[in-house]
Image (tube, rainbow, N blue to C red; front, side, top):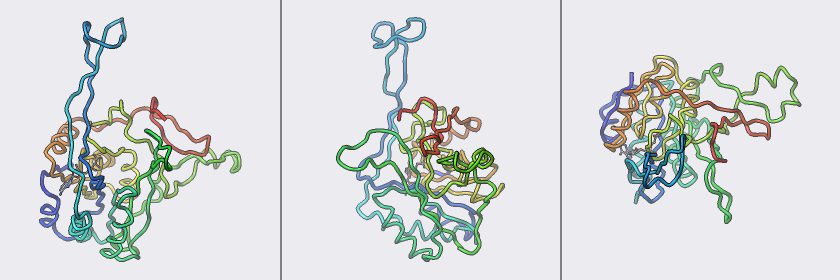
Length: 295
Ligand SMILES: C[S@@+](CC[C@H](N)C(=O)[O-])C[C@H]1O[C@@H](n2cnc3c(N)ncnc32)[C@H](O)[C@@H]1O
């Protein structure tokens, strides 16, 4: 069951009982200092003013559709996050885990904050989500990764379904023999995965939407069928999409009415089917890349 809640997440969390959720994943605003916006583009047929020709010689033009946005600038980012992280720990089940998705701007500060709230021994992994899309700076190394911090409520007792981990291609399959090469290997804490491709059916039009494939791995490995999941910075509800594909219940909280509207539409439709993918493994990369993705 997917439950969509329109509320400030601190107010929501304060109303939850201790230990209510088995897995909490959050992707808070990254404190970029700007408004995060996305304008959906539509292709419309226009024989008079169309600027390109499509199938059957028809003329088309692109027009701007709906615009969604949320604010991402905080005077006191850690002061905003801290009470929410304290509550996140309280609402976790005794064997539950918290995943916090950030980028290089804030991850180090948030790691120190979470070490204080959970205890350093509860820090399990920093997962690096590496992608390969968009422009490349010529003045510094192009930043193409996010960090996902994993904290276990109890580092001696947590859910980790090793058997549910998907396998990835070896970098040098010739060195391991055909049987191992065919089976693939366990991924490390560096996960190569495409961003949500521009033209895929997965795309909701919400800015900063995360790919469902990434969250499916977290859901499969860190929860069990029937578990209760929570994302209290839900945006377009990607955790919920992963949860319903794997038979978990999920509560999605967001304070932005545009996010709530997008989630309502997303979950009124049948579970999303991922676009066809091709494996890229040959040159040492083990990414799943959607067909047609610009590289
Ligand atoms: C980075 S986006 C999440 C994107 C999401 N992971 C997805 O795949 O679409 C962060 C979200 O947090 C929401 N948010 C920010 N402050 C909030 C608050 N105090 N309470 C609830 N939601 C909040 C924003 O409206 C935004 O939708």
